[in-house]
Length: 102
Image 1 (cartoon, rainbow, N blue to C red):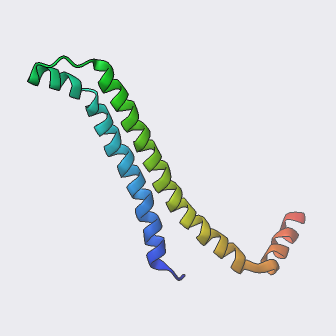
Image 2 (cartoon, one colour):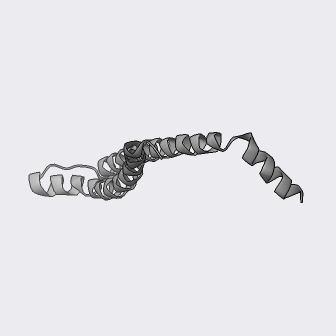
């Protein structure tokens, strides 16, 4: 059970992925209302389409960050699973095959 810091890092990446998704979603939704605030505050006419496009771009970047953070955390976990299965060795696999055949 080595590499405790790496296991913590995998968990941090997974948690960070979900936090990024939640916060990024709220920010993306708030971007929808920025054009109406600009037009009412400054008196400059701004199309609502600008807010919609900006919201889709923000959602896209949020999803990319979510996938990258979650994927990296899962990759670290996968490496630990491979390491654990490698240490089992062929003896354990033969015993499992005998149990399955019986």
